[in-house]
Length: 212
Image (cartoon, rainbow, N blue to C red):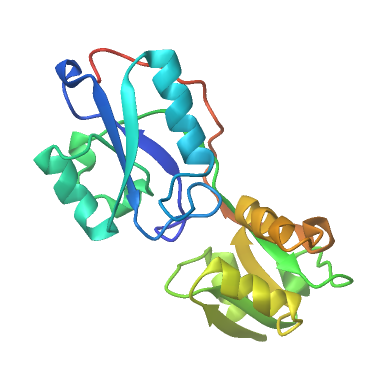
């Protein structure tokens, strides 16, 4: 579990007098958490809307380049961020509150090639370019697996569906979202092998005046 994994965490920094919550996220989007022409669809958007209703506090989502998110928090342009906490250089100024959603990377395989363990892997595998995965998987790739890199989840899914790969490592929820969008049964590719995950589960929305 390292910086390549993404987790949804809300960080609260502004005083309660502001009575608003501006949540940042990368302007690249993260399917299915937020997407669309204006990044106005997805699970995160639904969470923000639910929070607004339950807490009675206006909340919105503003796309921003990842490298500017810490700066925006410092300057008060936003008071929450949708990101892996390991990306953020201000841990002493932040604390996580609900809701927190699971982000889990799973190994997907061609139908008929369902490995029982990582020792059973053989052939080619595709991972996200620049991501860092578990030590167990990295050791396997260094032996008898041919590694291919992809720039995004759509490219990785295309390679897998066109049988150019034996395996692919993708976020479980993202794979199912994309597979359904092209009318492919995701269960026929799913395996029991979880590469890594953040061990957290969705929590109910709460608000604390001292934290807002």
